[in-house]
Length: 228
Ligand SMILES: [Zn+2]
Image 1 (cartoon, rainbow, N blue to C red):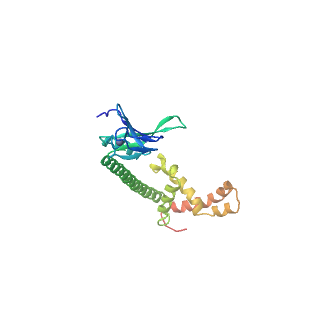
Image 2 (cartoon, rainbow, N blue to C red):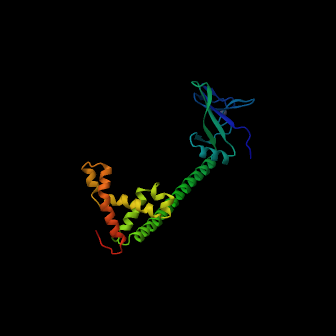
Image 3 (cartoon, helix red, strand yellow):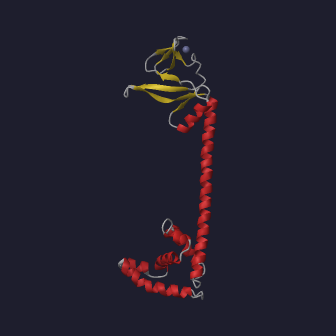
């Protein structure tokens, strides 16, 4: 249903008087202009039962207006800008209540949806970590117990959005797994961090530790479960 033109309520700058009841309304009175009647106070215009909803919440305003059979736009003249500016809306109280309830329900629905997405993401991540760990265990059967889970968790954190989330890693491509493995191994199984701390060039440090890492990996590829 399309509404007829909005009723306009003006916040007056001047001392105002209602042309119907004759009441003096003072400065900043809320009045409406009615053809043939002049300036009316809200009581005489039968708008007094409406509640004011200031501008600022577009969704709330739209809904309140939709639910309100009678509504009015509140305008105030800005001397600085030389034009009338919208201050808000006068709406029926039940309409505002209903609009507020709907906006609240929306916010709750959004929060619930976000919760479900977080749960789903955590589940996906967990499945991913488990599959990754199984692949590490397949490639390196001699890897110490639980180490494959640590590696998988590390890889998923460190490389999320990079290797860990790439198509290659999703299919548990051997090379991707190895890359992650090396990156992890550099820090975990060798003195790489120690070398860096001693201000070794990063590249030299990597070369230095690579043979050590290779040695560890070779031993893990043999299914003997020896802890190093
Ligand atoms: Zn009046």
